[in-house]
Image (cartoon, rainbow, N blue to C red; front, side, top):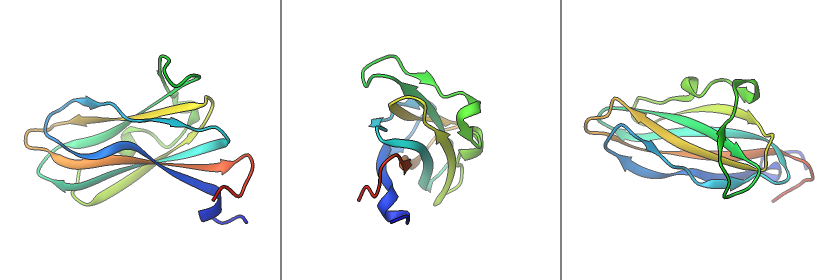
Length: 131
């Protein structure tokens, strides 16, 4: 099968949560074994103020030191995937080069805050279907 359902895996990159300050909120470690691409989906629900921007990092080991994914391996930009309006979402693509991915959320211009999170959809499996 070549449809999206059978060739993608959905992960929570950053748990949906209320964010009430300008800070970097650490994301979850995602094992990308068996996949070559990812789509990072930044989601904002209720909002008074603030912006949520993804910080996309990678590592060879789950507990190692994560480094920023360079722009050469992004399809779009992290800044272009930032959301700053209620009930909206935006995306950036990633060509995977290391096994582990972590997507944190950088919140800025926050005084009261918003509810938001990040979903990571793994795609282009080396062997499919996956579901």
